[in-house]
Length: 183
Image (cartoon, rainbow, N blue to C red):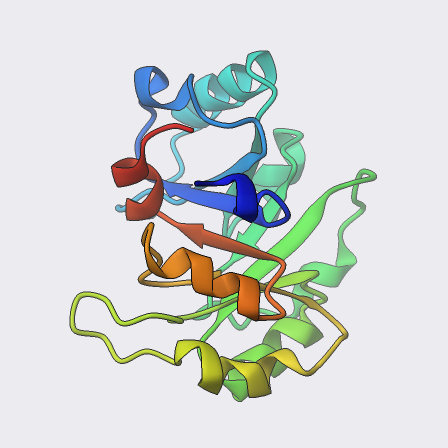
């Protein structure tokens, strides 16, 4: 079923390091470490980094540019709530990515000022009672070609197929990868 989705980049938000679950992941999935308690424990990140290196997975850290650079990770995820504009002052290695999420035009403009390469537009589908942008409403947000668009929110094995009708270049989630299984 993922064959038709092979053109999409895939991002998996994780909040705990479970090597048994992660070891069988598709190598095209990028992990985003976003702990629930928002505390980045260096030991855990370092273990996860070594695991990712051994298993050829990419690892991105949420909301901590300095630590992501220091640990030589693949990039940083900047949440929609993070409005800091001082990210442009860092010396970055080749291939280091800035990605982030936005829920509306205002937040998209903030992400563009932060020089984010890919913006996770959320929520695309309704989940947990939260209102959604849905595919047709998100099209207006996708007309801007200055950044790549990643679908986030409420994606499941049924509605993920609808992304083929959009200008999204990828999708991100938590439950999709947990419920779907590793591959």
